[in-house]
Length: 466
Image (cartoon, rainbow, N blue to C red; front, side, top):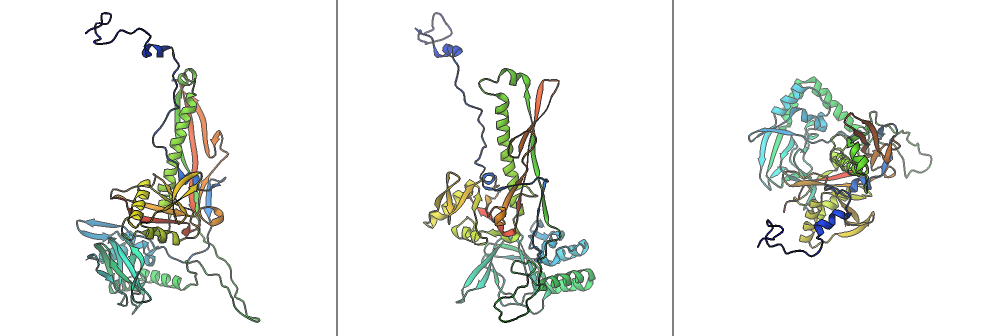
């Protein structure tokens, strides 16, 4: 039934007091500061020790190393036919620095594609080592002989890995290990005879290979650094060796990167609507949060200094089965001393918990910077949503040692900037234009450096799909 005073409102009971809608016109509402989605704990930024870089560039000096890079290769395909990209062959230690593109193309065209089923042998221990093998796709176990004749997994090889490049410069040698396919594998093989034929046709390749063999003969320690001659256990007046410590002639330099934006605020807004909350202050707070989130994203993903792209290739491991297992985490830990924390996407941590549950193993928790977090072997496992998850539902787990005093991973920044509002972040007023809009330049300068290769390790191609 329609109300007599308000014929358009049907069924409304006649009120005998002021309603809440009317009362709100005279009331002051309680309100929250502006909220935003996408904020994370930013554990990496909190856990890294930050080093002041007043000159804008940080140089990492190291001992001279004779070890040649053990890079990974990239491949192209036309349908089912796979071929290694010619210039990628320079990732092989044998060909690193070789610049003859015509010969690299000739080498690339002579690789023969082979397909191996799961469980098939790619190379067998004790058989003649007469090929360079490139793993184009798939996963294989590198097996050694155990004390009682059983097989031991020495390493896991996957897309882009290779073996045998040193074997083709030696004669009558045999494989010291077995390589067995764990999944179906596409492998490219180059026979030693083909490589030797190309060497005979190219004096430049002969000189390059001779220089490579000569480098291998130079005294070096177990990690490839130029050896320091020492003597121990001698008696009497033994002649002591003379030595010196040589340095890298071209050390890596890290230039500070920048993340910036221009914040615009109309003067009418900041003048008239600044009570009870300062509009400029709230705009800056949200902008700084976004800038810090982008900073952490760059620390992990930047192609120049990001940790995912700067880990040494010998410190990149593959899972043995797919999901992250306790065995994989132990392998990651044993490659370095004093690991201080893991870093993984929250979904990757969930996949690790599932793998532990299947084994009836339950990771502990530890207190880290005032929060309770999952830990493995007492090392905190910190969540970080900046680590990408790829289309095939794989991701990575990082582990690192930090600090200059430990020859670890460090963050780089510059403080004491003009108009600095927090360490390394400045807000500089630019101008007010003819539309009465004020502009503020918000800037932060940062980078990250890995002081020695074993400070950072990565478990790659971790499957997180259920």
